[in-house]
Length: 217
Image 1: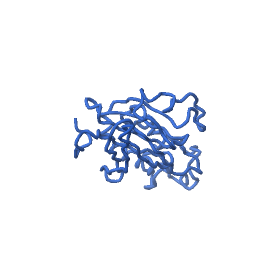
Image 2: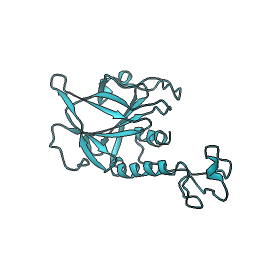
Image 3: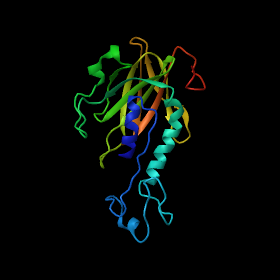
Image 4: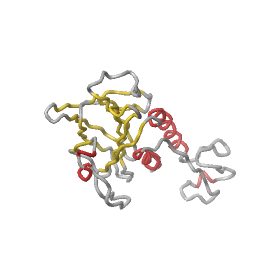
């Protein structure tokens, strides 16, 4: 849930996150009793407690911060275009009238269709400032239920692209298998996303030589 909350603003052009950290001493409902035993207390969810014991969410926040740090250089150079959801209503948040690929229409949308976008999926569409042919997608799996599993979505983008996916572990890019339809002039590809997590996908214009740096301008 922390990941989903942190990554959702990125779908709409967010450039980063700021944590508001707080903890009510001895009354925080989600801390196991052993963490409150004796003199162990916490100043905030992101700080080590007395005795060197980390707060239960410390590791999760640390991992999110690392991802955001690696994404930061890319996000700062992107301008938001649009955001679509797998379904017009989110079954978890009960939000309604969410924009979908079908409701926006191909003329307003980089993505022309999705053969398998799950209801709890969302996709933010962005491009490099001053280089609009250099597209990026942020895919978010909004499902944070205990029974949630990784979901895959096959997307179809208008145009010819070299598709790359950001590797969170080493801050590099790896090619994603894609298929170009010369008749329809579309590129299709499939991306899997873990529950509450996101993936950053780069669509480099197929008419250009693929650069070593995805943020070429």
